[in-house]
Amino acid sequence: MRVRSIRALALLVSIAALLIPPSHGAADATGGYLMLKGGVFAPTASQSVNQIGNLGTFPTSGDFDLALGTMFGLLGLQLDAGYLWTSSSGVKVSGYPVSAVLQLRFPILFVVPYIEAGLGVFIATASFSDGSSGSSSKAAFMAPFGGGVDLLLGPLIVGAEARYLYISPTDYNFSNSFGSNTASLHMAGVAVTGNIGFRFSN
Image (tube, rainbow, N blue to C red; front, side, top):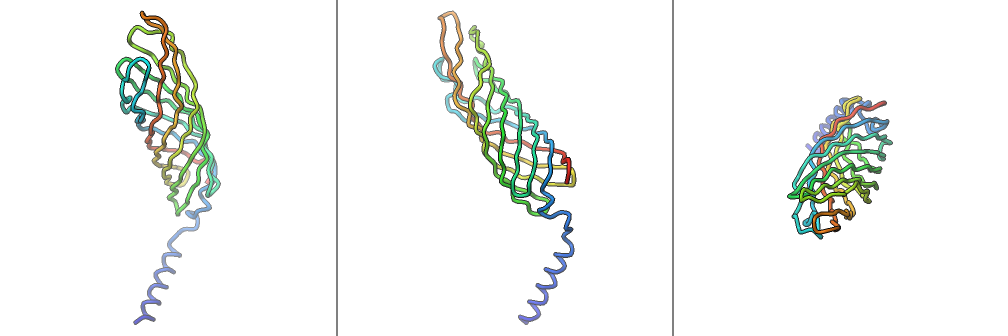
């Protein structure tokens, strides 16, 4: 009985090995690509803006990114630039995250989960609707980290990703009827996107 079980198991393994195309192995997780990402951005700071009153957390809003990257099997490098926006009572924010991210990838046939971390800059413009003026665009330090999964379907990449964006608080000088003041903007949050891309080589 045990001999039959071992033979049956060996037969199943042999059939599985024959059915797995070699062109879909881990070695295919290489090459450059261009990717479009779209989804939601959920700010996580409990106090979005201070020194002009606690406006609470900014609501969940939208996020779009364009990424250029390359895969080396277990490693990946991605450069991306995006646009996100959100608003709370009295404050509207437009943000432009730009980052370079290093990925650790785990190719399993055509499915490639990964984790990632990087550095970048977050450029944001805040406008105040209480009669304030003079808030120009400011740049802040940003550190994205998270993970996702890619499906490598020939030259096409389809995937999903979640990133936490640490964004250092940024001070904005503005003026209103009471004179000059400073608002500190807190924009850290989580971006969740669906991704679609095209590989230059595979």
